[in-house]
Image (cartoon, rainbow, N blue to C red):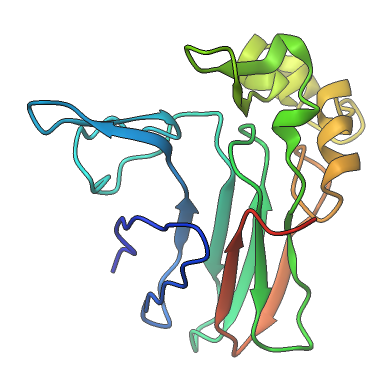
Length: 195
């Protein structure tokens, strides 16, 4: 079961139900428009479907990703994180309703502190997203792949360090281990929270 697409306005609360075995990614497209032919396109996190629903298609980076993975046989144990591995487009927080579980996320606006060479801007010059150095440069050293595909040989890039400082609970580079586990909980997701 997919979560689908829905529009969320300022101060809106949206309820969405997925069965206990659901796992997947949640992301948020922004600056979306519909042309005269009904084709939907978004300036950030566009999935290329041309429709309101992404129909399972992945979002184009840069994008803030919320990952929910279910590894338990009884569908009660979730591993979850907010990933900035493919950049950033919106601040978001995940709050497990089980109070013994760790909230995670990125409440800060990384667009405001994004390095100049990684900024994605709209036609008016406003920064609307921040690329990851890996996606921007496709350098194995920045992506922690090939000869740099181990913790011993890969260090966070200067861009990843900017992300880490702004959002210490988010997964910002390959080996930072910022994933959390929670049993028997639903999750509240807050967009653009007050930092």
